[in-house]
Length: 164
Image (tube, rainbow, N blue to C red):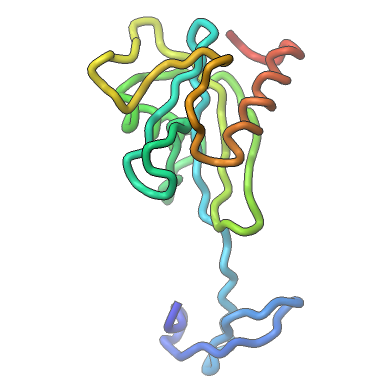
């Protein structure tokens, strides 16, 4: 951020609450940089998980769960449903929260849900960017947290915490 959103003054770096932060020289406004919020879905169908192949960086060409940023005024659950629809052209039903994932070196926190396909939905074989994979033969996953999400989801399933 270059200018203060309160008074349009310029910023200077100062120690505030133990961290170096941008502080407006004119009005004292402190800019607290927070993480972006993303939401995603782990879609299970008959023992397989639906993955989306990334066509942009980072990790272009690898596979991950449908996910994306939460828009202003949108809940994480609404964003997860929207992202599933946008990235897979499928309608899903959310079953439960799997977990919240973040990496201290990245500015994104991911809220991950388990979901299942609606009764009439099935991935099209025409879409080479979306596919169902058996759990024992997954392709190269995009992000470190993808394996942790799968582990957490499996642990919840083993404990009988899944809806379907």
